[in-house]
Length: 132
Image (cartoon, rainbow, N blue to C red; front, side, top):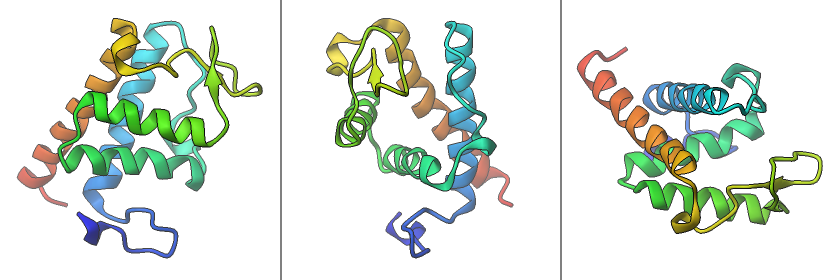
């Protein structure tokens, strides 16, 4: 999968990664919407900088990361970007209720990680069955 990193920004430039990133993001966004969280923009509205960690997560899943590892990588990125735990998600204050160890996440938050993994794996199967 290292061959997927082809451009100078180290952003994966591959049909499968792009397909899975968009699908996983939108599936997660739909789950969040159903849970009452409308804070996520559509994938196409994300900046290149915002899409980079989404693609990194997809690559991790394609390399075999578990939902717990997906969460740990997300947690490390958020903390490195100055985020901390908060009761509610607050972009301005950089607070998020899921900034906890995986074992302490609510079942609803854990499902988001399952959605990422399952959607990415489904896109992988579809991509290899019906290549572009």
